[in-house]
Image 1: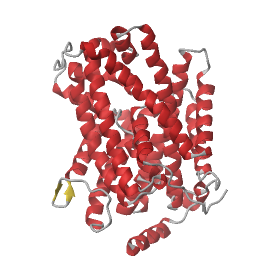
Image 2 (image 1 turned 120 degrees about the vertical axis):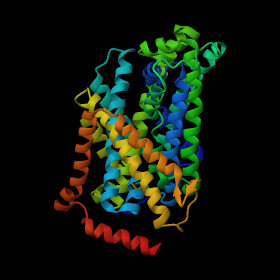
Image 3 (image 1 turned 90 degrees about the horizontal axis):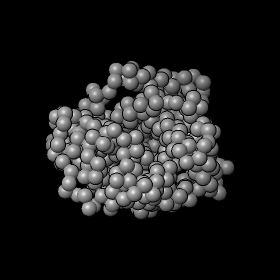
Image 4 (image 1 turned 90 degrees about the vertical axis):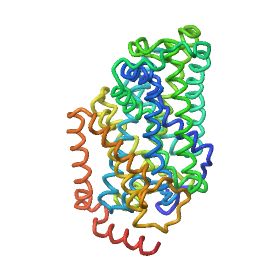
Length: 444
């Protein structure tokens, strides 16, 4: 166990892209499509396309920034370079909060799915999943990612099953039926946007990627493209078989689609796949959350103990254990629906900061080496980053006031934590960190 050991570059383009697809797909699409159909009607495929476009705006920013600064801190590193230590901490805090709360929610979802097959208690099963995932991550990142790759192939296989069995019904749906107007098609796109999130977490694997300046942008954009194709085809297929009213009324919409298109036995397979999907999402959330903790520790914004590496396995064991511990704390209540909704606020907050960081760094570091450069700039400003900010602000406007109020508390805690840790002498002073940042910039 060493604080001087480093992460090893063991992940290639296939592993990274598959990890991105696994994080993005998750289990949400197996449920969320029903709610979105109730808003968009038969035009749900349009909502999927709009959500994909919005994800691409921010995904492009992550692609360029990850090619500039291939660090485990990812979002934290980008904001720190653009706006300073405090802004970097807030952005990293957003991602850590969103990732680990989501990990807890998904683990509870896994236990809930399992109870439909076996009579088991939810909280102990959810904790057990997190502990097993943490042990696998400490054992080795390549091994953990390959388990995730296998689970991802099963997830994608479930969507392919839906598409394949629905194929004979294509052309039977009311694909342009919009029951509540165009505004609700956009509202559905806002909801479906969260079915695309996860690409931002992929960037935290930059220090373990081979040739990250090239592979990370390709993996991020490739994952968005693959999931977009799958989601749009699933949207068409679902409306073709059931219709939007039945989708909206269903608690397991994709299982119901397959039951009508094929039979109950095949529908049960979708239920089993959803079980693997939740387990996979929990594993990847812990992976990316632990890397963010590690990256912020290396940057000096979190205690140095979090940057300790298990020398033989080249894994950040302390950061992983802390990520597991935090996740378990949020699992214990057993019902975290309101808190889980706060992850949306944190995720969107991070997206605003990262898009703004790209704009800032275009002027601050115009000559910095970039393995990928976002196209469509106007006056040096990347238009997609501006659109990413605008779409994020629109999603803020659509959130409940209660969630926005909790979001303010998240921001306030994030602002206070650096001072508290500095006072406790567990991190460097903000002034010292800023001085180090300036020295790094002068050396570039």
